[in-house]
Length: 88
Image 1 (spheres, rainbow, N blue to C red):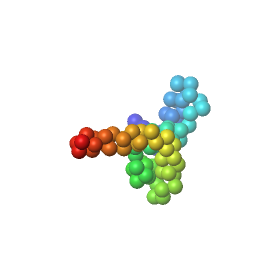
Image 2 (cartoon, one colour):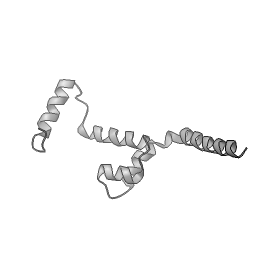
Image 3 (cartoon, rainbow, N blue to C red):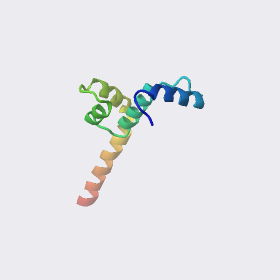
Image 4 (cartoon, rainbow, N blue to C red):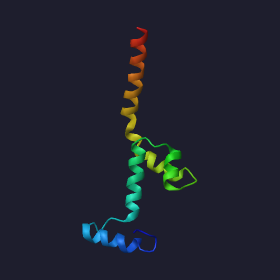
């Protein structure tokens, strides 16, 4: 069973078995939060996931999701077209 007092030993064993010597546990946290941000997590949701009370860290991850401009524009375009089809 994974506990605070045995985590390091288990983590090092996993790293050794997988050959991922350059992966640190914090990398998993960063990756998880990056994926959450690109999946549309809000600033508040990222803050909750990370356990932070300030928005500073959450904004770092949301900055990585800024490439969603095309996705957002496509959504807006679809909404306009639906309204035009309804009215037109």
